[in-house]
Length: 193
Image (cartoon, rainbow, N blue to C red; front, top):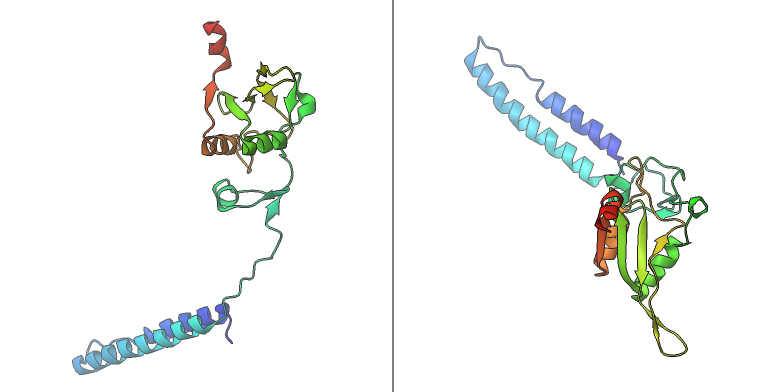
């Protein structure tokens, strides 16, 4: 069978040869006949070229990989919209750099799936830090124990304009799960108190 490259060459050659005929301006009857034959020949050659191209196998020359980058599955959204440039440079937040209690991002996602998350507060401007408030638990005495908000830590996506990492993904997930959330401007929050 023909390859796509061969079909493209045939199509290009057919188009070029079909339009190669020139008209002799001095002889009117010759000019009409050459245009008539040229158009017929052009359509004939184009038909042959398109037929060869359609008959070629649809084989991609791209390298087949595991469709992940840095352990994150590629999707049309994070693979194309952010023009992913490869590598594992940005694997999310490093919790060892935090000076406050936190939970790993993977644990947050698990609890979000279970319906344990009551509220999420993202810190402006882009949500690079977020605090989750979990639903109250019942202790041994049967009393509800309300937990304070806790920082979402290890692995939480931070904004990377050259890669796939963005808190926008977290906002999208939280919104999809119908969990209330808000963005807070830290400097303005101090004036409220």
